[in-house]
Structures are given as structure tokens and as C-alpha cells.
Length: 182
Picture 1: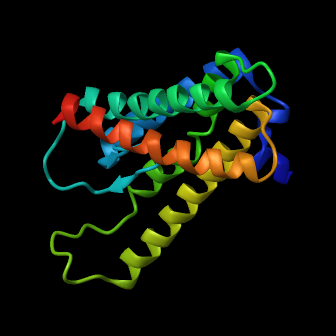
Picture 2 (picture 1 turned 30 degrees about the horizontal axis):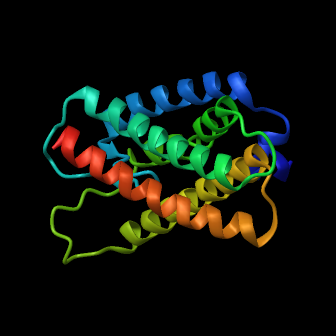
Picture 3 (picture 1 turned 135 degrees about the horizontal axis):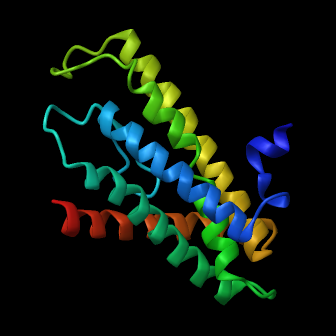
């Protein structure tokens, strides 16, 4: 059972995981629109991002820009450092599928407390922060396994390449989002 939660990529990859992942991303974007959840970075999720209402296309564009940044960086990294053949469809599909923990974050935000003044942090808000952090960690674990399986890179090499690639993908997604959505 834990394999399905942390490494489903031994069972599902390629085009099938891409289609399922895109459906998850679209459904999550719809929920995020109504719960005011922003995914404005490759591994970022912001709950209750203020009172300003953004157009619906922002909520769809954010996760697809994040996903595209991840796929670009991890595909290039895999092609450079793997001794195996790295297929674009495997990276694209598995990384789309890794986005599903954010579905739960978008749902949870309906229950999160509204806070206009951050000087008053309640225990309830801290609880939601820790729950959100747990889903982000889960997604990062999925991403690591997606990269490791799709690029066939093992050991400490996979860990270091993953960390560096994730930081680069985060920076690229932030830059693209800043210049396209703001």
C-alpha cells in the first residue's frame, strides 16, 4: 500500500500517468479557484492568498507552469546524467501525476481559518500550516521517486541531482509566474 502512496511509478508511467495527472491538475485548479488556493511555484501552495479575486485562468495557469518547469529541468537533468534512455513522456507523465497531493491542499483550504491580520496566529492556523507542509513533503517524495524511476538514477547521485533540479525548477517557475501573471 505504501508503494501507491510514495512510488506509484512502478505501476503507472508514460502517457497514462500524463492524462491522469493533467486531469488531477485541472480538477485541483477548479477547486483552488473556489478555495482561493494558489500554487505559485513548483512546490509552493498558499492558502487564502488575500481578498483579491484573481481570474480563473490564473488558477489553471499556475499549476501548468509549475509542472512545465519541473518537466523541463528534470528531463534535461535526466538526459545529461543518466546512462539510460530518458523518455520525455515518462518525465512529463510521472511529474504530472506527482501533483495529486495538492488536490487535498485545495480541498483543505475550504476549512482553513480566515486571517486578515497575521499578528494573531491561532493554533488552528498552525495546524493547517503543518498539514499543508505534510502534503508538500509528500509531493516532494513523489517527485523524487518519479525522477529516480523515470531517469534510472540511483544512490546519492539521484538525491543531489534531485535537490539541485528542484531548486532550479522552483526558481524558473517563480520567474515565469512573476512575468506572466503579475
